[in-house]
Structure formats: C-alpha cells, structure tokens
Amino acid sequence: MRRQELAGNLEQVRERIVQACIAAGRRAEEVTLIAVTKTWPASDVAHLIALGLREFGESREQEGHAKCSDLIDLLSVTQPPVRWHFIGQVQRNKAARVGQWADVIHSIDRLEILEPLLRSGRALQGLIQVRLDEGGQAGSGQRGGVPPAEAEALADAVASAGIPVRGVMGVAPLGAPAAPAFARLRAVRDRIQRQHPEAHWISAGMSGDLEEAIYEGATHVRLGTSILGSRY
Ligand SMILES: *Cc1c(COP(=O)(O)O)cnc(C)c1O
Image (cartoon, rainbow, N blue to C red; front, top):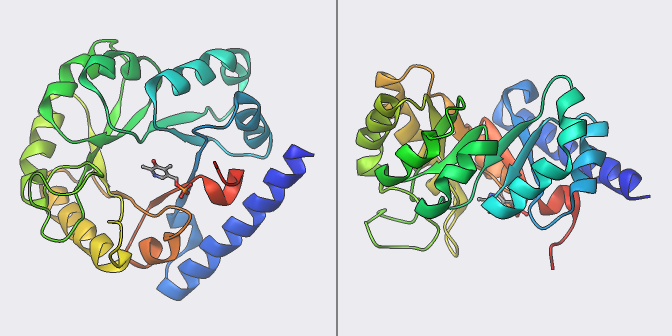
C-alpha cells in the first residue's frame, strides 16, 4: 500500500516538474529530483529505489547514517547506484561522520567543516549554500548559508581543499517571495562558474516552491512532503 501511495505522489510531482519546465521553456531532463526522506523510515527509501529513484536527501547525520546502514545490502546491489545528498547544516563535530556516507554536500557554508568532511578519504562533491534573505547580510536569517558576496571566495577554498564544487544551494526565505531569491542564487552560481566550469548546479526548490525554482534555473529540486507526505 505504501509503495502505491509513493508511486502516486511521485507521478503527481513529476507532472508538476514537467509543467514547470514547459512554463520555463526548459527540458524536464535538466531537472533532477532529490527525494528528501528525513523523518521517514528506511523502508520508504527502499520503496523509492524500487520505483526507480536514485537521489536521496537527508538533513541529519545520525538519521542518514542509520538509513545507509539499514539499507547496506540493498544499496550494495542497486544499479545505477544511489547517491546521498546531505542538505542540513553540517555541524563541525559531525562533519567527519557525514563524510563517511554522504556523496554530495549541499550545505557547505564555512571553512572549518572541510577538513573533517574529507577525513574519510571518500570522493565528495560540494555545493556552496548561499543565504537568500534580502541583502544576505552576515548574521541575518536562520536558514544557513554564506552571504552572496562571500560565496566565490568560499568556492575557491572548497575546491582547493579537494572537494569539487558543483554549484550552489539555497532555501527560499520565509515570508518573502521565492522567485527573486532564486534569481539571486542563479547570479551567484554564474559568478562561481567563471572560475569553476563544473559548478553549474542550482539546488533550489522544495515542495512549496519548485515552480519558481525551476523557472529561475534550478537543476536539482529537493522534495520531501510532496512525495512522502506531511511530516507532522
Ligand atoms: C526538508 C527539506 C527539504 C524538503 O522540504 P519539503 O517542503 O518537505 O519538500 C528541502 N530542502 C531542505 C534544506 C530541507 O531541510
């Protein structure tokens, strides 16, 4: 039953993505869907793997780590392989453990997490998380990220440390329109990409604002509620 429910939700959200791409004059293949499985059990990840998904997002180290362990047998035989995206704030004291299981770190926003992230020796890819509230001043907002003006310098440092920078990530500010925020994110991506040609990803858009994100160029949408249901 749960698998059918997830299949139905997936079909609906894929249709939303297709429609958003049509409205934006983009091709649906340009947008990668990441299923955000935080708070949901490993069995849901297994259902989604069976339904063909390979990109999963988690925002807490312990929870993501536990799911990877629970699913180790399935993950070891899944082809193409599953890719784990870490989308939550990386706490310094947990960064080394994040580096043991996550493949793409969306939420790089400061230097001090780089050395522990790399400690496991696994190949990681990184996105620079950019603060998207108006002005993007240091100290403003609670949704994390580096101020836009500091994003290029951070991208250079991340790449030098040995984490290839694939692009940027942002969360739309609460209580403000999403589209202008995503437009600012795209502008930061464009600047970073001048020095880092591989950094074309824009991870933006959640269940409530994926249309705005796709219109503003998102290459990766992070969807929890619209696939798995309400967490509350
Ligand atoms: C939870 C979460 C999402 C998914 O949000 P939904 O509204 O459930 O789609 C996306 N990005 C981040 C950073 C999150 O923490």
